[in-house]
Structures are given as C-alpha cells and as structure tokens.
Amino acid sequence: MNYSPLARCTKTGIRLQAAAVILLPVLVFALLGATDAQARDIDWASIQGKTVKLFYPGVASWEFVRSDDHGTGAIPVRTFKKACADCHVGQSGEMDINADKIISGTLKKSSSKEPFETEPLAGMPGFKDVQVKAAYDDQNIYLYFQWQGSGASVADPSLAQSDETDKIAVQLNNTIKSFALFGCFMTCHNDENGMPDNKGKDVKLYGYYTRDKDGNPIPRDKLDQYQSKGLFIDLLTADFEGKTVKAKDEYILDQRADDSQNDLTATGSYDNGTYTVVMTRKLATGDKYDLEIKDGKSFHIGIAIHDNKNKGRKHYVSFPLSIGLSNAADITAQKL
Picture 1 (cartoon, one colour):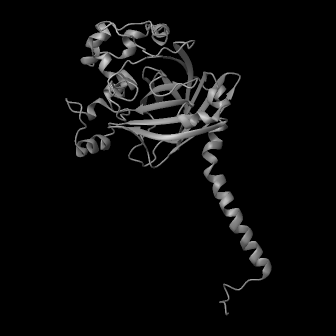
Picture 2 (cartoon, one colour):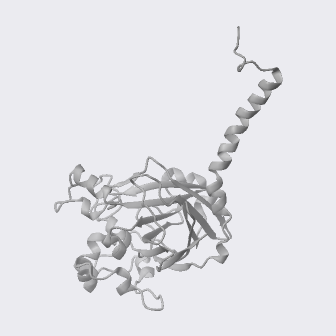
Picture 3 (tube, helix red, strand yellow):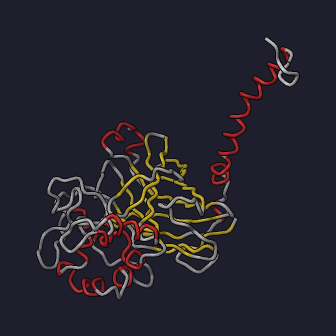
C-alpha cells in the first residue's frame, strides 16, 4: 500500500501518535475539571456567610398559607403584601413557628384543627441551621452549604434505591414575585405525592400559576411563554450516596423535571456529624431551563434538606433569601 509523504511515519512516530491519542483525552478531562478544582480551592473560611434557620413544615402548602387554617397570615399571602419572614422572623432572627410541635404531630391548624403532621417523626428536631456562603468569578457561581445531620445515606448508600438519601435541594429564581415573598411554598400543593388531597396520581412540585381555577394544567403554549420569560424555578440538588455526592440539574414549571442539559457539579463531605456541599454552575449556561445569574444583580433561593431516611415532603425548608453579586442582599457573593 502506498502512503502520501505526510502519511509516512516510522515505528517511533507511530508510538508518539499513540501516546498523543492517550494523553489528549486526559488533558481535556483535566481542563474540564478545572471548574471543580477551582471550587474546591476557594478559602471558604475567609468568606462571610449567613446562618439560615430551616424548619419542618409538615403538610403546610400553597393552599394552606392562603386559607383560614393559616389564621391572620392568610390575608398578606392572598394580597401578596408581605413575605413569610415579615411575620415569622423577628429582628434578631428568632422564628415564630412551632416547628418542634409540628414534627411531633401535636400542633393543630387554626380552623380545621387538623394536625400539621399526620405521621410524626419521633426524636427529630423541628429546626435545622444551615451555614450559607456564596462566591463567583467571571464564569461561575459557587454556593456553599454546611449543616448537621444523621449521615444515614453516607453509612448506607443503598438508601438511594428508595429515594431516602440525605440531600440538599436549592430552588432559584429572580423573576417571580411570589417566590421572592413565599419561596418554595408556591410550588407545594395539597394534591402532590404524600399530601392530604393526593388521589394516588404521581403529582410533583409545580408553580401554582400553571394550573387553571379547576386545577387542570394550562395549555402548553402558555407554559412555553412562562418559560421564555423566566417564570420557572431552577432547581439544584446534591444527594449523598455513601461518600459520593451526586448532582442533579432540574427545574419546576408545570411539574418537577430533569433538565436534559446538566450544568451542575457538586462536591461534598460528611465528617463528625457535619455535611458540607459546594455547588458549582456557570453564571450563564445557554440552557433555557437555567436561571441566568448576572454580576451586579441578585436572585432568591429557597433551601430544602432531607435527613435520616425521610423523603418526599418530609424535609426542612427555609424562607426565601436573596444572594447578591456585588450588590446588597441577605447574602453577598464574594467576587473571586
């Protein structure tokens, strides 16, 4: 067989080409992994954060916060006049919620007198503190979380098979007023899985505005309009399966769904009863189901934590808080 002069090579040349073929993917992998390495190299001890108090909500939902069962708190929600924290969090950070009684099943609703939790979680605290920090550079946003927990799915990775992993989920948005005021309550409803009015159907989280007055999903073209205007929730999750932290990029519109373009990475550890997670994502991914985060702007997040083999609605949640990139917010992300 004849080769052109450019194709001719010695045995040594062949070996060099083979080595290049092997080394090239290694180099590409190293470059792709630079984002994670940069996140791990951040000196988080030098970055100021905020301790956020999460609470156990039981079966409290969007319908609940707007109903007589919420007592005098229903009117501000119906009229969008006040945020949850305006009524439930004092100036020094104390929280006016009986979460210890909710999780034990002893607290009753104002009007119906039904319990906030029909399946009490014996021995579990009603509150959980989470340390939250944020940083960013020209390309990425980095979100740091640290909290105390059981380590159940770290010790037993098989819990992932029944969706009972210890995990953190973070909802993000910067366009929806009701999310800035009420956080994840706007995506939680009485007809969802595990909730009182669920009829056996698989109903996941959804924005209240994606249903008509009879509870039916609105037309697809209307949902597409909402999506194009950023009227959806960007959802980032990190699960502990043994010592492995698995990141999942999701979104919430008319349902909770996986984002086919996974733009999230996460690292984490569990040591002496303490979880630490760092989430990394580009400021702008080009994905229609990712929130675009901009320097000089702020966005809101809501945090949920599952612990000790509890899944579904049995989690701790935060009220919404803002994160600003070089501007005033509940948490100011530090420019790296």
